[in-house]
Image (cartoon, rainbow, N blue to C red; front, side, top):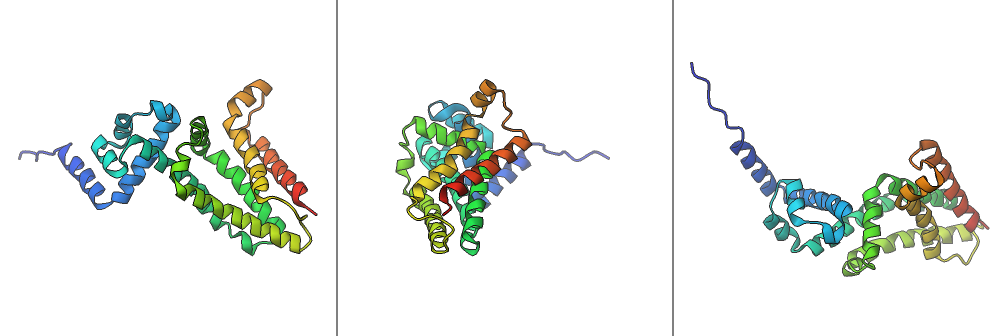
Length: 223
């Protein structure tokens, strides 16, 4: 009895094509993730749509269909990365916590998010090389980012009313204080770590730094 002929290529190709057709959101998400990897490694100027297509086993035509251009794809990658952190910040439900605990939770989350999402930090560094040119093209990023300031401002107001925080704190300054340390220890971890011979990936050092930034923030805002 002869064995049936099994095709190793065509059915899989058709399956992938049908999967993409039936799930355009997944296709878009896959392209975005591949593009983030490419932009992180090559920067905006060096990134190639061909390489992004290869990463997703798709075509340049499909990428242009979804995003229009490499520059717009780059903008959408920024929207995704900023959206990830802003959506999670909203899920922290700071309003249900006592003011001091809410501030600590947001500070610790910011620390952990930057530590675990190196691509976010590197993409922001790339965008600053471009003087924020592409962030300006996305009102969505600005709108999303305003939400964390609202939540932080509301928490500060509650703390002042309860007498645990001092009045007169600028919300944007507090947000910058939180973000700057968390960002710097990731963006500069190689140079800082090499020059000062410190392993910023060491878990004990991470926990020490997390406790330190929480302490700094609380000392700044306490009454």
